[in-house]
Length: 369
Ligand code: UD1
Image 1 (cartoon, rainbow, N blue to C red):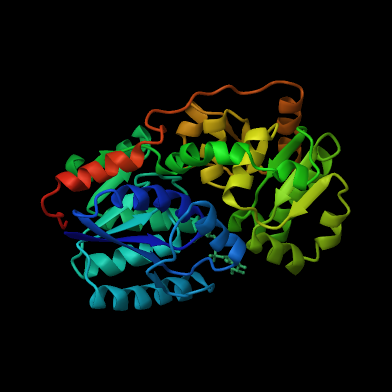
Image 2: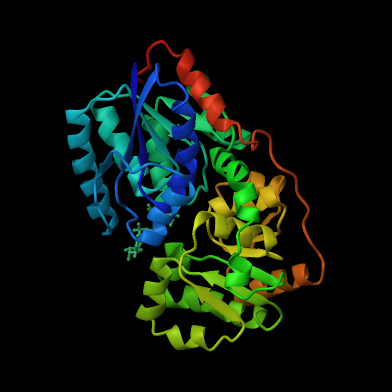
């Protein structure tokens, strides 16, 4: 029996770990899987809603670390997860993505000589000012199994000197959840609930580089103001962004935009529905660049670079310069019918969890470093 810990912490982890959890559960003779939630995200709308929609059980361990500076949050996760590892030593720890919980738990495990697998390994924005880029580099450097979503990720790892036998191109695990719940999402009544017809664009915004400076946030809000004169904008707002809008005294500016609908964070099915029905998406998220590519919906990414270049080379994504005029221009291009077509990349097919579990079934003993 192989004992495995699956780590989740922040919203984008849940839809990546759920399919893997379910796939391991098909082999109860081979694996004993425990779900560990660090508590990096704790609001009902950032966590429990997703557990419910993704039909995930209550975590075996909930570390309740909450918010803090990077140092505080990472340290708290490391301190609390190490205790769990010392009490209940697994044979393998699987972490996902690039959040603080990912790097913190990977460091804990390798220091106890427990092998680590990284889901979504090899992605690089090459911008070390992004906290996520540091988490990616750290986690990949110490992981034993690098499970990649796209060939560019394999290439990045090989360029960094990672031995090829540690790299497994398994595909995009987040798309497994999307495929599994697409029909439920189609049936969502969120459009009626929000009083929307089919003519709207969807916005998400939460990157520190976009929302933590007043100038950056204003540049983007001014663009939303102008674009909202041409199309209804739906903006489910991240808690970080709510906090920053209040800190800069910009609440009135946002409220005055008649054609911009602010909502609290939205659950998984409802959000997928909004994505598939939107005319286009304006975002700085990582996962949404990928989901919009899957749906074939045009996506304008409000960032100077992306760690997911395949969404540009093959998908419907486009990077937009962080200038009010550029954002308006790109949105108007789409509204005038100039739409980027894309295709779904290889192995974004709903079978990534199967490919991963297959690897671990074949491993007699998990390799450490
Ligand atoms: C984190 C990830 C980011 C990911 C994002 C998805 C890191 C470094 N960043 O960013 O990569 O794209 O999650 O959402 O791990 N807050 C709440 N309720 C919550 C969680 C957070 O109100 O449940 C507020 C707190 O004020 C907190 C702030 O949001 O200080 C930021 O939360 P944090 O976990 O530090 O980072 P995110 O911006 O959510």
